[in-house]
Image 1 (cartoon, rainbow, N blue to C red):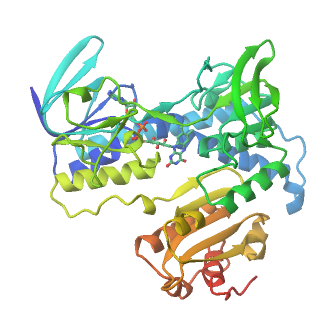
Image 2 (image 1 turned 45 degrees about the vertical axis):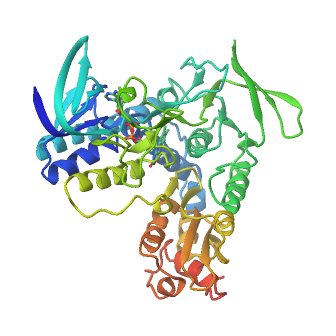
Image 3 (image 1 turned 90 degrees about the vertical axis):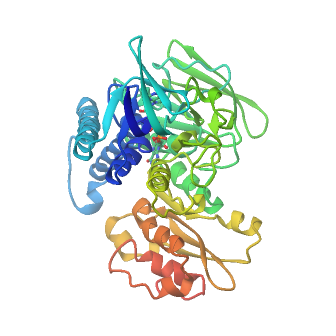
Length: 465
Ligand SMILES: Cc1cc2nc3c(=O)[nH]c(=O)nc-3n(C[C@H](O)[C@H](O)[C@H](O)COP(=O)(O)OP(=O)(O)OC[C@H]3O[C@@H](n4cnc5c(N)ncnc54)[C@H](O)[C@@H]3O)c2cc1C
C-alpha cells in the first residue's frame, strides 16, 4: 500500500495550492481528483473562464466606444466561436501548468473518487476499481456545485448554471439571471456587453447584497444605465421551458405576479458543498447542511482530518480564501508558525463592469459590531487616470474606527477596483491607521492614487474633491 504524509482530495485552488506548498515543506503528498483534469471549479467553470469572457466583453466595449477616443471603427463583428476557443485555450494551458507544477514539486496525482476509508486510510475508486493508501493526514478540498431553486429543473440547454452558460453555441437574444451575487452580476455584465437583453432577479432588496449598501446602489444605477433590467425583492415562483426559451414567473416587490420570457435563464443562487460520499460518517467531523465545521486552523473534530475551500462552514466561497486556508493547514502540519484564518481579511473581487473590490467590514457591519465609525468617500470622477481611461463611474469608500483611525473596511466600485483593493488588503492585514495610509505615497497618475484621497477624505482632507 502506498504511504503518504498527506492526501488531498480535490485539485481546485484549495487542493492544488495546498499540495504544492506541502511538498515544498517536505511532506510526501498525493492529490486525488475525480475529473480528468486539474484545477477544479475555479479554473474550468469559475474564476478563469468568466474573467476571459469579461475581458473579451471589455475589449468589445472599447471598440464600440472607439469614437470617444477619436478612432473610427467600422463593421465590428464578434466571432463567438473564436471567443470560446480562446477561453478554452487559456483554461487548458493553466490546467497543464498545474500538471507541470506537480511534477516540478514531486506532488503525485491519482485520478478517481477519493473517500475516507478509516483512520489513516483513503480509498480511491476509478472505473469500479478501488485502491487504498495509508496517509498521516487527509485534507478535504472537494469544492461546490451550483444550487438550483426548488422545482426548477436545470436542463443545461435553456435553463443553465455557470457551467453551460460558458459554452453556449451562440449569444442569446435575451437572458434572465436569477441571483444578483458575484456570479449573477458577472454574467449579466458579460452578455449585456455582447448585446443580449438582460434582466436580473434578486430575492433580497439590493444587488450584490454582501457588499456595502452604497456599492449596491452604485452598481444598480450603473447596470440600469446600460439597459440591464433589475428586479429586487423578486420571488421566483417557477421557471418553465417553452417553444421560444423559458418563462420565469415571479412575485414582484409590490406582491404582484409577473412573468418574464427569455431565450435562456441562468440560475445563480449560490453553491452547495460537495461533501456527500466522502466517508465523513466514519469520522467525528461535524457536518451541517453539507458544510464541514472547522476551527480557525481548518482542523475538523477528527484528528488528522482537515477541510478547506467551498465546503467549510461559515467561510467565504472564494478561490483565494481556499488557497490561504490550504497554506495554514499544511504549514501547521509541517510545524511552521501559521496565523489563524481571519475571514475579515479576505478581499472580495467582482469583475462586472464597473468592477467591485472590497475588504473588511461594511459601514453597517462596523456599526453593528459596536465600533464608533467614521467614513470617507472619494469619487473616481475626480481622479485624473480615470478620466484618461474614460471610466468615471464609482467611488472608494473607507470605513474607519473613530478614535485611533484603524481601517476597518474599504469598498471600491469603479475602474480596476479588483486591483486597487490590493493596497487596502495589506492595510487591513497590517492593522494600519488612517495616518499610516495618508502618508503612504501613491504613484501619479494612477487609478490607485484615489485611495490616498479616499483615506484623507475621512478627515475631510481630500485634495481632489
Ligand atoms: C462562475 C464562477 C465564477 C467565480 N469567480 C471567482 C473569482 O473570480 N474569484 C474567486 O476567488 N472565486 C470565484 N469563484 C469561486 C471559486 O471558483 C471557488 O471558491 C473555488 O473554486 C473553490 O475552490 P475549492 O478548491 O474549494 O473547490 P473547487 O475549485 O470546486 O475544486 C474541487 C475539486 O474537487 C474535486 N472533487 C470533488 N469531490 C471529489 C472526490 N470525492 N474525489 C476526488 N475529487 C473530488 C472536483 O472535481 C474539483 O476538481 C467563482 C465561482 C463560479 C461558479
